[in-house]
Image 1 (cartoon, one colour):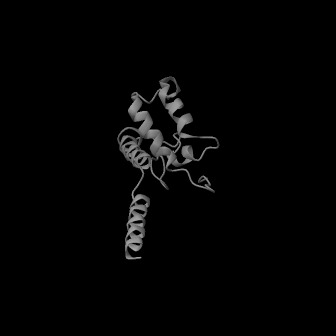
Image 2: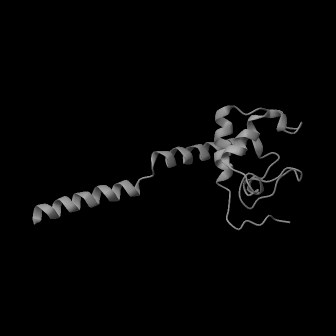
Image 3: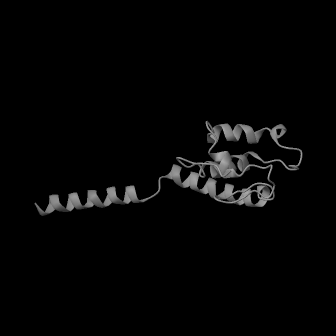
Length: 120
């Protein structure tokens, strides 16, 4: 009986450790989103509100929270848009590389909220 108890205890410890650790995919997504936040603050914040509950410096530029909560927006559709520089306004005088596009889209989708209501 004590041996069975030790085996069960060991199995419980392994299971607990497995569930308490972020999964590799989750870790990668969290890292991408964090890099995307840095890109947003460095490259986008002059025109866009890049954080929750903030206002865009340029009233014509939508905030990232508004973008994230548009119907049908996914990380994939956002990446597709960001990859095509012809979508950018003339005022945007830079391009994003593939890694920046991936990271920026990962960050923006973290701003999606259930029941989101845009500020008027």
